[in-house]
Image 1: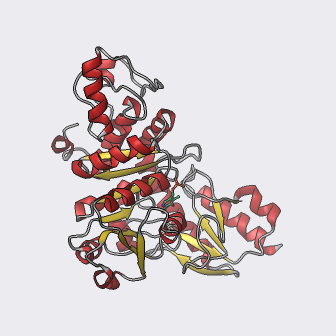
Image 2: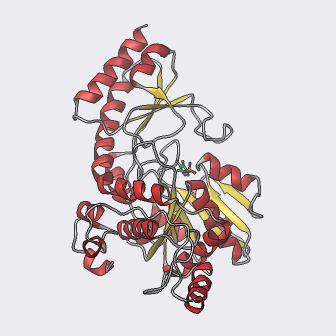
Image 3: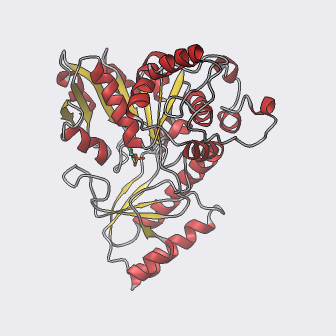
Length: 380
Ligand SMILES: *Cc1c(COP(=O)(O)O)cnc(C)c1O
């Protein structure tokens, strides 16, 4: 898609149309799901050429065979085009999970021969863990403030990794300050929480914007996925890693994620509104220790959702009626995130319970019901 022509379109419009440029020509309205693992080769020579190109991370040449699903899939390619459009990126590469996407980014950076990582904490537990385990042959210096980043960078540093808003505390760090601190070292932003609706890290100078599509992009709790938005040169390296390691997004997952993008702006806006209302209702309750709602002005610029630490005593029966304990977020109902799920306990900010607001259906009513249910639960 012509990204310059997209500049004139409202992001909500882009969310509905991006990655669908060929549907008219195909004569279909909904996104087609292509499940072929193998594709016909017109002849051995051109098939071999296409194989070489795709295995090296190149994109599909005009009229060439995709050869094999691990190398290229049209359903996934449409979704990648759509996410790249929303992120204002050259390209995007979709993976089977957020962790697979993060792994490929770290591998791509390390492949350049620089095996040191600087990571800003707090950071998603899985990311923290894979770095701390040195599973990818990297070593990591952890910092807790943007001011410590430049001092932590050495000649061996291949990547700086940060999250803003951070999981789970919603700590905000200025993208411009992160880019300045990383200097010439590529900066990877885990943009799962903000989504491209609220911030586009590449427009600030980050090299990568990474998502666990499992959360807000999928949005309904029924698809696992990850995706990286980046420039063409990095996309080629990262696709090459995906072609060899095989952690690509399944076409059904790509379809669900792409479909999720169409309602992403609506869901994110409603979730923001519910977050504020729920946090306001909860903060007055006994047992609520802390609210994590970034200040409104920064929220508009950088985006975030609200969370509330609830030191429970909530009656289990009541809690289960509306607010279920979950290990993840993004679905359309309320979640309570128990301590230690998907995050390392020794990381700062891990709390006994974090309430995450859903998008809700009817504005106001759903929040009031949830707040009332929590009130009833508290009274027990
Ligand atoms: C969930 C999550 C991940 C990991 O994604 P998976 O799809 O579970 O592999 C990475 N980063 C953040 C911020 C997350 O919330």
